[in-house]
Length: 420
Ligand code: F6P
Image (cartoon, rainbow, N blue to C red; front, top):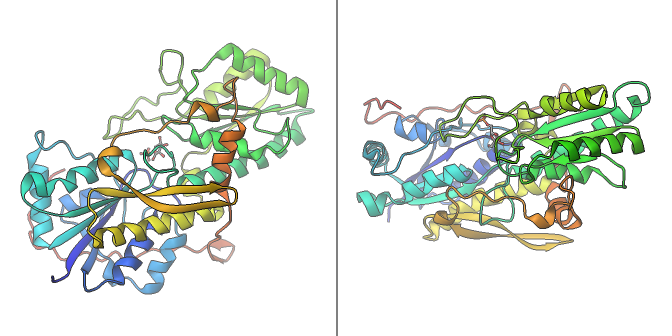
């Protein structure tokens, strides 16, 4: 069979290691010129495919592709764009087929979270529903760690490490100041519906009494009185209190404590701002001076303190997707399989896209302390290996030196615009 071309695209909120997956995909594809002709990348994810706006990764040097392994964010641009169902919007699928056929795309690799795996699943069905057979693989990615079917998600370990490191460092700061000034530090972290990132802050504590003293998780409905009593108790016993709160914290009725009032293309509420709300609540009720930080994009862009385990896994799932596709697998996503906790051992497995699309994996109750404000030993055992190891980028003039690709466009063959 003559080689077919492949399309790789990044989707959803980016991470500090999603480009390591891109590196894995591109390096693996380059080893199989007999099966994969050109490897294109969608500019801004699936939107690039719909707009016939694709990047020729073949124009990038070996060195530039290798540098993706340590460059954060999405080198080709990412998107929040939902493909509607076939019945709702057949036009989008017809357009995809038109673009794929014009460029002889036989393989599609979609690197994203749960919503993006839904897109990958729909594309994988183009053969069955629309007569354009395509090999389609999902590649896992999300700092939220909430994808089903995999032990963990590339992107999470590095965000977790950043948050645990920051909790330990800021904890030392507030402990120094608490006698005469700041008694409370609040750190808000990501995690829309699942508290994995906030939970990882718990790794910062080595001894009883170490920060974080309170972790607020979306899995545990917020109890104002119990929370304030725990903060007060921490200040009385240790002199200060560090709180880590997940952006997705909800009240007893399931309403977000902080809702920025807007929604993305998937209908997800834009979150952010629960940290300041919680901090102000403590100051009003207990009178403590506070400082508050919203980690926001810092935590998912922080490649300088990435977890080596996470980088290795991100790269491995990228490579595995290509190898699986060439071995004839379709409509699946490579996964991380945990073989042992200590010493940590992992391997690559696979899960059907139909079991991943639109499913959210929450923290199990066994990882959450009985009072709801911390993690258990089981939680620590799960989280600990994922932040292991450092994989520093090269530095120049005191700053990490990241790559910016040329991102040369593939000449259009259709030329017809497509409005999205
Ligand atoms: O990708 C998941 C996530 O990191 C969430 O935790 C967060 O709510 C969201 O992305 C914010 O992303 P953006 O506003 O960039 O779409």
